[in-house]
Amino acid sequence: MGSIQVSRGTRDILPEEVIYWQHVEATARELLHQAAYRELRTPIFEQTNLFERGIGEATDVVGKEMYTFKDRGDRSITLRPEGTAGAVRAYIEHKLYAQGGVQRLWYIGPMFRYERPQAGRQRQFHQIGVESLGSTDPRADAEVIAIASQLLQALGVPQWTLSLNSLGTAADRQQYRDALVNYLNQYKTDLDPDSQDRLQRNPLRILDSKDPKTKEIAQTAPNILDYLGEDSKQHFDRVQQLLTDLDIAYQLNPCLVRGLDYYTHTAFEFELDGLGNQATVCGGGRYDRLVAELGGPETPAVGWAIGMERLILLLQDAQITLNQSLDFYCVARGAAAEAQALLICQNLRKQGFSVEMDLSGSAFGKQLKRADRSGAVACLILGETEACDRTVQLKWLTSGEQESLSQNDLNTQADQLQTRMVAARSKLST
Ligand code: ATP
Ligand code: MG
Image (cartoon, rainbow, N blue to C red):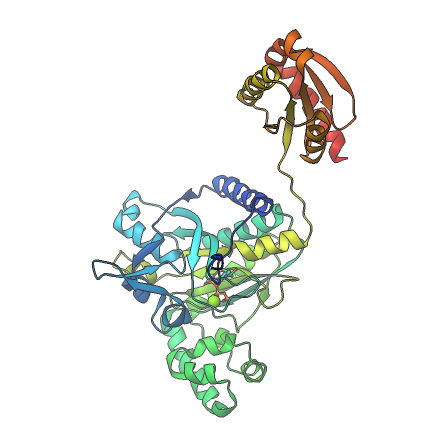
């Protein structure tokens, strides 16, 4: 019988790659903390109708991509395909609006969509997202965009494009929708089958088609910006002005409509260079109707979600190298030495060092080779002599220098050792 493999569209993240994930998570965590965002953790599954009502039944996500099933109590359950609906449900359920002011929330975690798997497109993928609930101020739009751009910058992403559009109010959009359908109807038979299908259901999404012929037709379609009412226009102008003040480059893209139904006004996407078809790493926008639609009080909001797989693919491709740092590798041979080594390792860890202990009991030569390969800055060596004398050989793998220390000094002189460790490590990286 063959071995069982990981499910299609999912993957294991092995330790070499986890370093990247931890780096992205830590950077995001710190930056979002600086911007006064608080983390929210919601369940991975929700009642199906949350997404049907929240995201919209005509969308691809709800229509084709959800993992929906009946649980043993005959309830319809869906694995969350995105984070906003759950965050808004929690916001309403726990009356976070009653705290007044703006609620700035962020989340991280797996999302699930039944899609055709490709590089940067999976069935289980991960997002980091922010939601800023409670303000119509264009500064809220600018703030979330600024944070996304700061995060990309902090991670060392070399180049990206920020595309911006406005979808106006629901009323603006209805007018635009009519004009667009009129226009597209003239070319109905030239559209790709998917787009023909969307003509009644979700015509704005046609603008976003990847089919070359449809794209060409979309090029000369009516421009949504011409259909914005006065307030929508003002809001959008202000957002653009604020981004310019923040020195954040953007380009207007009237074809940017986003996949989810709940967007109003500002919509935006960050695209990374060098990711092929799966170039959009972050998508977001304003959603002033969603909270009320899900049964909460009228609450304007704006947010985004970053796809972590795509971001990490790029960081790896850009050969941004990260190493899991190890301070000591400890080798020992002989029963007494091995027992002492265990204590020494544990004591060093308590002092804040990272330490790997060789458990093989094999010849010193073999253990020392493993020490070299471990990436540790220094190696601790204990043989019979050291066990008798209560000493340890400390070998700096960066320079090859070796010295003898009493085991007691290892415990009492942690500060000095830490200083030397930092010095040796900096030599390593230059
Ligand atoms: P796409 O057009 O690529 O399908 P989307 O508009 O469906 O993206 P959003 O719902 O806006 O994506 O999600 C925000 C981000 O999450 C995307 O920009 C992308 O980086 C990431 N993402 C979405 N779906 C997937 C997936 N199946 N696999 C990996 N990442 C994804
Ligand atoms: Mg999609």
